[in-house]
Length: 226
Image (cartoon, rainbow, N blue to C red; front, side):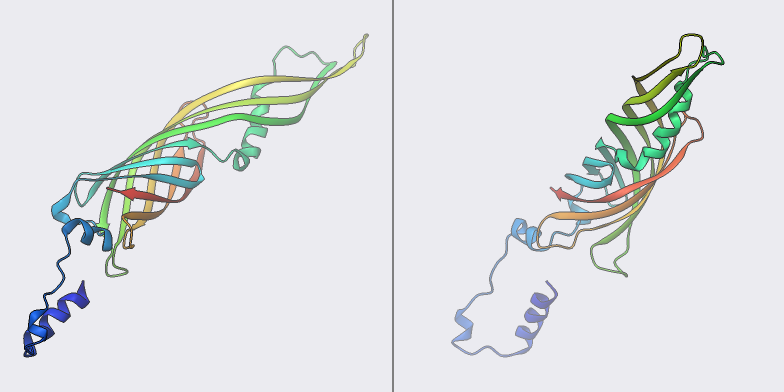
């Protein structure tokens, strides 16, 4: 677009020949210009974006841009269960029965996350960072996250009493919790296609099942903007 503007200025300063005067400048429609240079135009809000995010979690993501500075985002998908192995391992202790006698013992062996789904909604404030790079926006915000996890634990049960017993057992537990989440990230939208790329980090705090538990989350993703 800058080159085109420069060309127009130069053309106005240079006298056309008779032959060149018969040619007209190409006219680019607004829709085509938007695809060639898909920048968020202040006069064209609201916008919407839909895409995916990779990381913790792996999710589908939707974002609504009502104006230049405010946005709403909703993500839903699967948490990276492997990153929570130690946490779920430690949670085994909370499921031990209180009725064990001195001769009985339970030893943790392994666990498996049968499901680990999450859903979150976020309100974001955005501001331009074009001094760093054209098409770049920074954003920060607050939201709420819901998590649903299904776990299966394998353990060894031993009884050294008058009738000794030792065998492998398992049990399943469902965990549901929620809590606030803080978000910080940046979004880049200066491509030859109407898409935006983003990187964000989040700070989640559990307020229901394990009050006080906190963890960093985040990922990278792409959205188709329309």
